[in-house]
Length: 234
Image 1 (cartoon, rainbow, N blue to C red):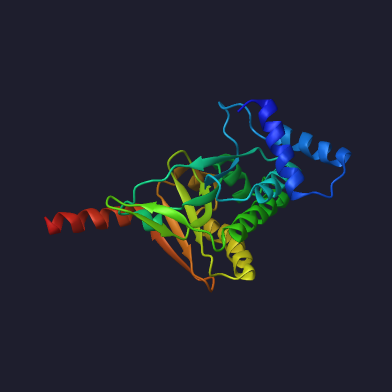
Image 2 (image 1 turned 90 degrees about the vertical axis):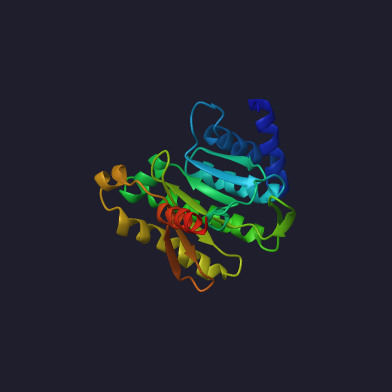
């Protein structure tokens, strides 16, 4: 997308989301968002939103963009493509906010200020709230089913590894806030220095229940379990 088209898209989103802004303030906010938004495709934005086209309201997306620009975090959203239901689908996120590894590391090591993490948590809550009651199509090998989209936050720990935190629409807003506060605590239990961050070599899925309790799943171990089960059934 060209810079001019991106400018127009952000302007339209802001007008819908914040109709009371005067022209001068609107233009300042657009300019700020344009500076933080990533146009160079060779450079990876530190925060991303993966979503199916049309699932998130433009007005809510505008709020996320505004939050990211307020703390100088580069941000972009991209559309997910419908995928065929696989055996590990129950551990995958349909919609997620992704925090790339450099920022994840800075947050864990205390280098990034608290404002950055607060903006990310607020953005997660905006998307979580907007998804309540919405559904998407799940494609299997035989049919298309309608499902509630899974949602959460993906904290990258390198090119191929991450911790994925699953939230549920059945949570209250207070439980969502409390669960997000637990994210860093959980990560610090697994990673408490720079060496451990660099050496982290697994995929972890953490599922929060509606009352905020979590269940930890090592995705590599789960894959091996399913492979062993398939081999036994042959």
